[in-house]
Length: 339
Image 1 (cartoon, rainbow, N blue to C red):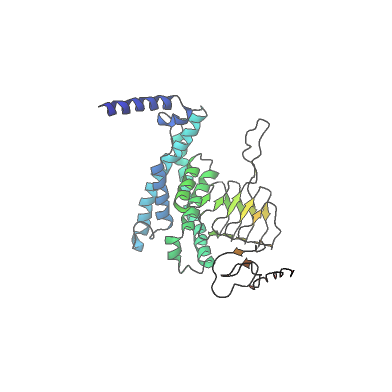
Image 2: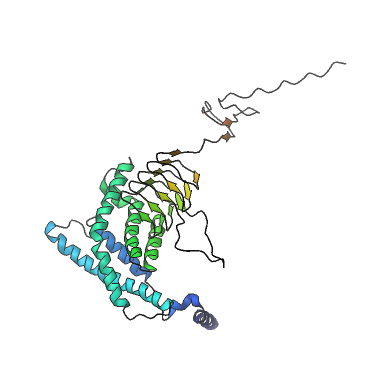
């Protein structure tokens, strides 16, 4: 009984905290999109855009149109409600209550539905880019089923459409949902061209004002980020300015590379090597790599020391070896002078 009373007291205290805090206003009157519904929307989009791969399979041709109609009707119903909630949230947040949010939600959801054939065509190019860009990929089926970049890019293509429509909150929830599942963080504001491929994908970050051209390939751990965050006279962050780089057509960026700054442009056809740090523009057709560092290898070595830059310490040797693998000669000890 005492435990129940204590839990009740804690609950009352928490409720008072929520009522008095602006951070918990959505617990009562403020409408927000449902996290579960957003996941449902993205799963329905996946079933529609990759029909036959996800959801029902072995769909006969005569049933294809009716099956799509059922799924898209379901998608519209859920999507329009979540768009309306996003619009309503903004109206309430700005203290400009709007009675037309439901109507606007349906209108904007329908605009996105009209874009589905276009999104499908763009995704076909992304799947083709993955197949062409990875020798480990054996088929379209393998790419669609197992490559996390396809899920991340699909969600981004959808979220970007909502972002362009001016829908608040919902596009970001979608992009973070994909981030959670795939490890790929693409802000819905980023503009990405055709035939985009992210190999492996884990740890990739693409910032809000990034512009990516056509036929771009990037690897895991790549960051396309901001170099700094400008502030106004009062110290507030300036928003709506270009903070992230532009990547032109036919660029490849290898694992761990970091490209920063709104004025930074990676020129068409360039190759950016792994682990580089770039804060200024690169001309078209440029190859940027880090000079190999010298290696110090300690411990037991068996066989021949690998040739190349670097030094190693072999078993039994007291000094370092040279880059060719030959141990450095030790200086001879002088014999003590005879009396």
